[in-house]
Picture 1 (cartoon, rainbow, N blue to C red):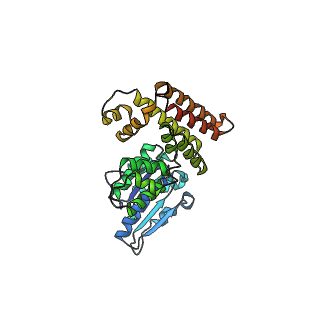
Picture 2 (cartoon, one colour):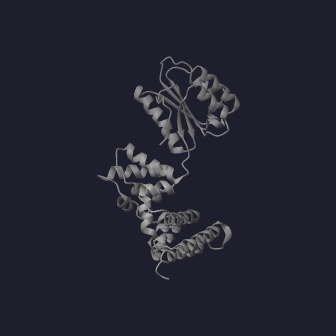
Picture 3 (cartoon, one colour):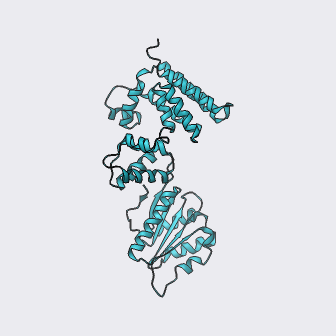
Length: 329
């Protein structure tokens, strides 16, 4: 889901890929190489790290060839280039060679900003490759992957896939490709569950869903499976907190259509429907009790207790009980 500038010719003299998301950076390089080899199957590709691009190396790589061959020169971690090499690159930007595409991969921070500014001033085609740290970004990425393959997936399926796979974009992209290749018709949550049984069940959000639904035994089973498969305890407390807060937000909101509530509460409409189903047994006091339990568990898993697993189990049981507080008097 890398964003590109309006001038999106992969064979432009200079492509600048900015960010720290490795998958997107690699895709930016692959797009340029593919376009170059489509134009000339014998394109020479040089993929270099900063220690391989010494002063004078770029001049050698971009010097005129007797055979007028097309060439792609990729420079990774351009922010780490030495001062002398940066001078060489800046000089080259002022007079790029024909039939050569230079691809600079830059982390985008303050380090090496002079080279970044020079490349932009030179009119580089820019591809944004930001690190996707937010769940919403990974969800949007998953949707875009399905769209790029010409496939349809429900919002619930995309969310289930993100919950099951986690933050690794390469694994997310691979999972989307597998589902698109193997499944005919629309891809829904049930399909994702069948393919990723175990991983999906081990996700932190599944633990939270079962807990806020008051399903104690299933929540504890999912919790133990999650911990056994390496899910970080802090991710589980975060999911529990999100689940309880969603209950609290929706219970305090004015009635209305899911779309209206979604805008008011900052949730997708499909989640409004899910939380409405989950909140049936909750009371305001139950929400308060559950939030305290989450806070205690969070402190426990971050070093405030001797047994993080026990802290999580205690929180899950407390939340599940709070979910059934309505009707117990």
